[in-house]
Image 1: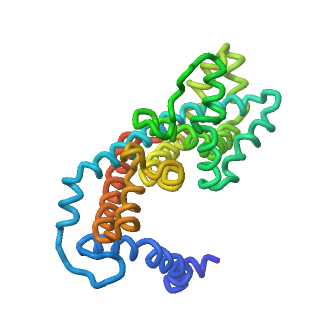
Image 2 (image 1 turned 60 degrees about the vertical axis):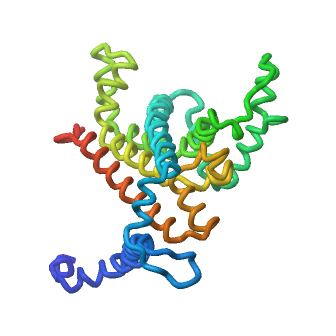
Image 3 (image 1 turned 90 degrees about the vertical axis):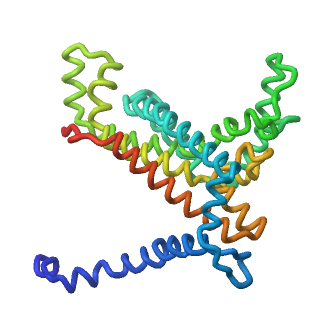
Length: 292
């Protein structure tokens, strides 16, 4: 084994297939997206080079910045929801009765496709006979909102199924990290008189902070490129009030056949995501994680 690992040729042969797939499936499409953004192209005919015109138009496009703002709001909501996921994980890891059953229930949304989840919540939000408005009328609210047709509430309504969809994923990550904490540390804290809140905040949270940082990056980056559930539920409407960068890019490329402009939006989405990721990494960076 040592001979193999010391042979540069063998190392190259081992990693070449992975590097080739990364180049073909990720790097080349990214370069082509940036290149197509320099073109006036409908996706079928010949391309005409127009330089930075698409990128300049995007920067001056109010609809693009509206969609970027909506994506950033979703990123903020997703980051704040991590507090809920972490709290639930700590409760499940504290050996409460029925924890195994609850953990399995939280994983159910992970088994469903985004399209199925979108269709389910469209039924829940149905203004005439949906479950939510039926309950609201039952408690005396005469005119509950049309959740997916009201520009003032549609983005917040969409966030609820997104929160539900990814609950199991983040809870599972936090639960696994919490179960890796030595029980002796918890028992020692209890002997010293620490209450459950102090144990959670002073012991458990610092010990899994490395995992928390990773989930923050995952939540923010995932929100910035989120597309499928939103597109199925609202298509970016009404009047663009739930449009996010990914859905705006899709509409431009496939609904209006403006592949050049859509590619420019996609490349700007990549740049914004990279910038936000770097900022988050800087903000959450620390000299060292606590070891146990």
